[in-house]
Length: 506
Image (cartoon, rainbow, N blue to C red):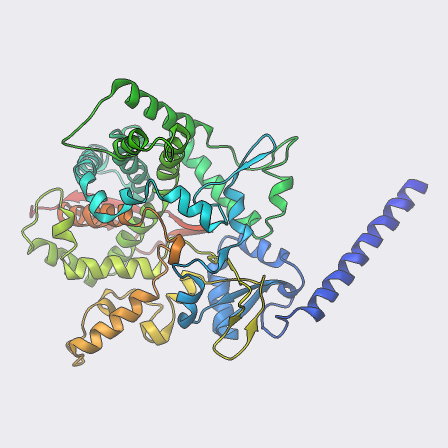
């Protein structure tokens, strides 16, 4: 009984101290005037459980609708929805550093923490890591790999024909678009797919591992200190399975390429480029750097593309007028299979459909967290956010701003990206409105830490969507059914069941 009494007294003391500390934080906080949920002002457990629930982007939309441009989501974190501050938080100088939320993507080997270009909080480390590979992600360089994308699109269509068109079976389009996205980035990187389309399933378990890693990152990232006791626990790590198999695969591809000394002048891949830098500048790119770059390519380049592809197909099929108008534009454009990026990127309605899909369903659904520097942050109403406060914007909130996107901002409407001739909109007015929408686009982030694979995703999407709608007739198995959405950093979709037929007009 004595031990039980001591335990209960200790527990009571701990809870009392925690309560006193939380109250002290509440009353002394320099951001106490910023509104938000009551419990969020005391503890990050509020946003931990909100994120665990799977739809925090909807919560944040509701909170900004209720409280305005600044909402307190934790004792030291503020969500901001004022578009005028976007280029302040996310500028090319990187004045606002990433928060510790991102450190969950560090790797722990023994007692050593290994950073990567996504997880590092240091601008210097990021710039140094990006310097040898950045040129390979410019659109001019990405376009040199277009023949490899063509090969993957052709293989994708062949598999869809075999599995669904010829059999009449329904296609789980959400799954197959993910298979395609992983295979196409592997094709661009190694000149060989990962094999998900051939197998028609997650045969290696890699896709399930990626999903579990995202679930962990999103939820535990709301209280990053937990990560040291969970995934980075030196005794028994508790967290998602590792990406060791993916790292081994990347290492094997690099080793085989160097041993064979193989060169493909007609269809160069990204590994060719990385190894060329290693050969000419071994002091800045050794084998470890090459493998790290390959791994980031494979792991970070698939989910965002798959999410965007799903959004385009889902929203287009949900809106018959959009579907019809898009097909008419494609039919009248004299296109070939697979459609070239040069041809697809000049189709105005296709461009509008893609941009609207990115706006209405951005891939990332959490705050892009940054830390306020010593210079502070002043909000539009004069409120000063002190140094050390975590601030951030969520694309799901910014993209719904009615002052920028109109009173129908919550609706899927590709026409908002086109000049409104019926309303007498002048070209100057349209360009001003278009510029405002583009500058508030957070689909791929912004500033010095903008998504590295942005142009890869854009190339894939314009090509595969134009080819897809040109080649196939598609319809939902159940037109009334809504998809399922899970926000685990990436806002993944599932339950997109579609019937596919070849179009009679080819």
